[in-house]
Image (spheres, rainbow, N blue to C red):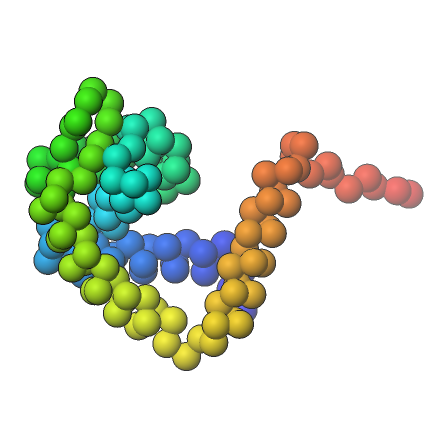
Length: 146
């Protein structure tokens, strides 16, 4: 059996590749779609710094800034004030259309996986992450005893 890190990386790569392909028909990438969701979840307007904070685990600042520029250039979002993003009316409408495809994508991804299995997988990964983030530093080397 391959270790969990192998499957985490493969899963993330497969999700990104498949989502980028599916979202490409809307002119989006997975990351651009995530940017739009952060803005939508913040009642339709969010500071760039909030978008970067929420999505920090997904990409570095330069890549996130490129995704922000992309949603602005493609008319999904606009700047109501410097450093702030807001969904355009067209962007909000189009995001609703994308949601239908994303729902179908999620069903495809989780085919054959019960809700309980999915929940367990997410809870285990969350616990592993919290264990590592709470760790005070490197794991000490085992002592060698004669």
